[in-house]
Image (tube, rainbow, N blue to C red; front, side, top):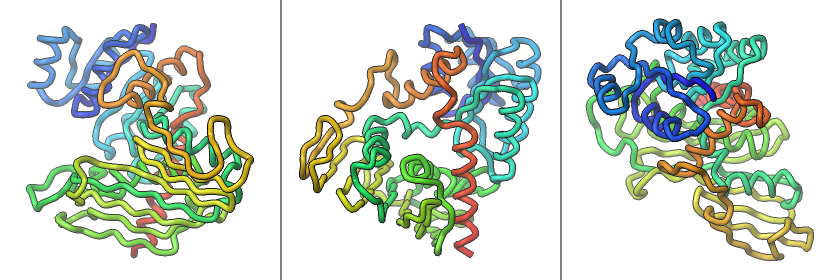
Length: 336
């Protein structure tokens, strides 16, 4: 049994808490937030110990692991404190505002032998996992181009400023939404090494970008395009996709459907020459508790199993999140 505490009971924090509450290997020992209304509800209906000061919570309940779901600007100091206490950490994405901060946390987690994971849930989506297996298995031949995309109706009118419109809070399309696509590119293909030019374009926002367009080169010298727009109301909800083209085939995938074309007979099991279509329902492992999508439960199951020593700490580590933070920094610099 793992004793788990939560810091930050906003949208993602409550989502994590719901999944953790149903997990057979988890005991929730504390919830910390600055909202009295939220904490009153937690105490009344969930009967959970609540705190407004995370340090007091840590001293009193002594958790084995903590989920950090606060704005990104608080991540560095808060996660650093947890690691210094030798507490395992699951942090929401992105890891930090600056890659130098993320790099510090990578080293600190290693030094203190702490399990570390960041909430890039797309790595647990069945279609994207299949893309990685096909690409890294060499079935598309030599990769020479990719496109990473995400579109949706997050900011579709001028409105009162929130954390999404404050770059110092981790707001803006690049950090909040494009980071998901960048993380997939890093994981499936290779880390972003440079950008040959980027446009960070405001549509409705005044202080941050609502769209990101960038020409990227990866560490393996493959080039491609990043295109993300969270002010596109032709979509009902945010949609993420990746296209990879190689000398022996092409793959197009979003979170629901994977389409792949193979040119020659060297094929992965279950596929044929020409076009193939597979759906996420065929490629997704069952989870014990469903909320929003299997990937949200799957990432938490993986973290808990890592803490229990059942699986290696190798997916969505702080190191992989640092690579994403570094790519964000590269794109920012290339837009100036």
